[in-house]
Every structure is written in structure tokens, then in C-alpha cells.
Image 1 (cartoon, helix red, strand yellow):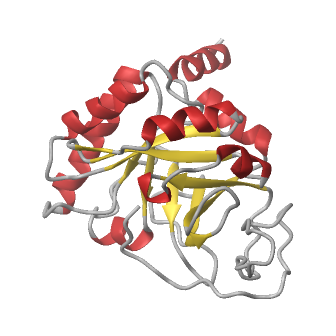
Image 2 (spheres, rainbow, N blue to C red):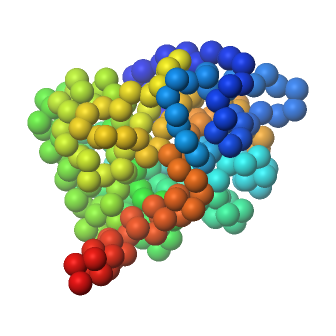
Length: 258
């Protein structure tokens, strides 16, 4: 993914116990962990996000390294399909990595056309995690128009796939370019490379996924890769996957009402 915010992550002594190492590296490589944060993250699950930039991925090695979920790019806007999507989508599935598709959103292009491209790509095999709208550019649109176009994309995907999409964004961008629009019905995938605790853009109360670096290393992937955390244990991640389906949500809400 492209970035508007790059705050270096420095290597510090291990002091934050979150279950396992946050960054995978091949033997002999230096490890670049998250710093010792003052906030309590609680249990987390490790994941990555990838596109054709990672070239040919050895998914079995990735899974053996402890990566349990992956967001995989479908396209850049409505016209640039990711040439590695099909390979990565099937490869991650074969080794049991939970998958979510993401699309780099171009606000100057048709939100419906972009959504329809993603829908067509995953309709037969929707993956296990909700699809993602990756919002990093305003396309020259003022905040109200940008928010409206994001909502159009979200509604299209929700209606067609019966799933609640995830919004990927950064705290400064959302505040300054999106005007702090309220999309709190959507889980937040936060992009924040920081030496401290991640900053959650209002009005979201918390992050669900956190992309904490674009300089990670994972066995099975040549070169740098984005590293992510899920806020919860693996059972919670599986529950998010299940409950993200609107049919499941509707059934659950109906049961509570009775």
C-alpha cells in the first residue's frame, strides 16, 4: 500500500509480552520489534498484507512462520487489476491463512465501478475476513464528497456480498482529509507507524487491525512486507470472520430480541 505517514519504528529491548514475536525474520537477520509500549495491547494475532510488489510468495513458509491472516490486494482503482491476486488468494487458502481482499480506492473514479471489480473477484470465494476499502488519497475531493464516495463503496459491497467491509486509513488522513467522517459501523484497520501507542482516529473508539510497519520481513517473502496485528486472540479473529456476515449478524440480533 502507498503511505502518507512514515514514522520510523526503532529497535528496543523486548519488554512487551503479547504472546509471540511481532516480526518474523529469517535466521541471521536483525529483528525490528515494536517498541516497549506504555499501553496494553492484550492478546494479538499476527498478519500481513500483500500485492504484486511481494512477487512470488511461498505461502507454506509464511504460514509456518506464524502468520495467521493476510489481506490481499485485488486492484488499484477500477482499471489496474493486481496480477498476483489469484495466485495469492489461492495460495493463502491452501495453507490455512485467513484471507481478506483489499482494494486501493481512487476517489476520483466511480465508487460503484471499483466496488463491482472487487465483488466480481471474490464472489465465488469471498475469503474468511471482510473485504477492505483502502483509503489513502482524497482524489481532490473535499471531505464531505470523499466520505460520500467511501459510503457508496461500502454500501455496494455490503449489499452484494452481505458482509460489513473494513476501512483502512491513517489517523491524520482521516481527521484532515475525510473530516472525521463517522464510519464506525465498519471495523477499522489502522495504518500508523509509530514509536508509541497507535493513534485511533475519532470517532472510532478502537482499532481492529493495526498495520504497524511496512518494513517487516517474513520467511517465504523476498524483501519488505507490511506487518499487521489483530486486536484479540485467534478465536476472536475467527468470530469476527463469522459475525461479519450480515446473515449471521441478523440471526444473532433476532435471537437477542426474542
